[in-house]
Picture 1 (tube, rainbow, N blue to C red):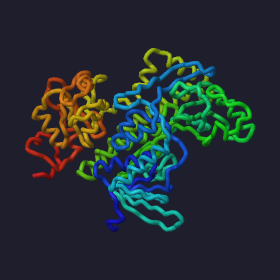
Picture 2: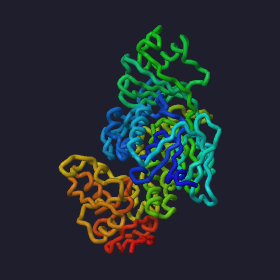
Picture 3: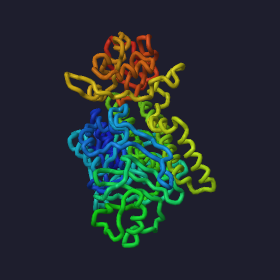
Picture 4: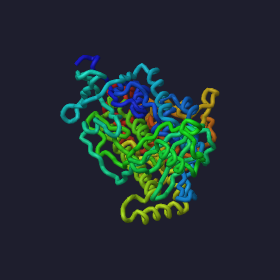
Length: 540
């Protein structure tokens, strides 16, 4: 094959997950080619919610300020009964631990345009539109390179590109999922809903959050997306029309709890239906996310009902988790075993979010089986238990499971920091007030509350990681308090800002680096770093 026909990474699908993956790889110096069958951004809204963790990911690709200009913080989620009385409220803060509002409403085409504009500013990234991928194949045992076969618009001719890795960001109907031999695990939720996006200047009754109506006969979801933009979701029959005179009257009846639309008002007056679409909400999880150097991300790997607004968020988390590991393998010779941690870390979290979404769906509808009413009552009763709603609100990002890149130790269960995210306060750097990640960069980092010991410094040098003392950061005490609660003098942060390891209070060093060091490689190794086992180092 020619060099022109080979790329380090080929990404299939230029939706938010695929483009974010390309931008994250570019931050780590990895070139990628994104193949997309459409030539432009899909113009109609789909995803409308992201959380503060995802806002932090958007910060890492450099579009958070532009996104802030078009996003709107929301107060959280309410479960209402059929009479619109509050059953439970899942409050969300305007300032989460990642440094952003815990819930933000937005219009997906706006986000996609920002991401694509950022892509054009990165020379490491290429986007080919009007290209349909028809097959993905790799050698025995998943050996690289991977061959991607595609056809351009209006052509029946097969063309090929080879890659050291392929990321399948190609949605629920993923061709890549077939290529890795994955099958769906059914998590037992499937319902057909009508999504209706509206622009109106009429007064709308809203609490500035998301309403979920828990009613077995007419469940619904409502949210405000922008200044005059609103979304309703109703469980309707596929053949129930909302067009024409009779359809508009039915729509007026459905939205009446929130907005008064007098009879006879046409769609073009002050209540414009931007679109309506019928969707089947499903709960599914791919049984495998990788074969060799081919990976599944986003809807190709997991499908969730939309009731807690985590569908797109889960896909962007996939990209954030995988890309730094893939970059380390491709650019720094890390062991391929590092890539095994992607599914191991992300799959349990995806399963957890799907189950929470299904539980909310059951609270809304009770499902369709013979024990539906009992299940709906049980979920509603659980929501009234003190602490349950606050726990659900807080724990949409539970700690990653223990593993080679999450070093948990006996005696710290429930209080340890490994596997959790480092908070992101505002700090002072060069006399400027900036967010913490802006000075951490894209590498590993050591954050310490004590003077670095030689052994701590050796680890930092081996990983080319900056060391930051919390006393020098000028924050509001957030980081020092966080370390104290976790009984740690220092932490080692991964590039995705997850705590990989800790220096327990009073010890002065990371107790055991062998588990993760065997997976990581760096071409820079100094005499001071020789205590850190990096067996594949080629430096003299």
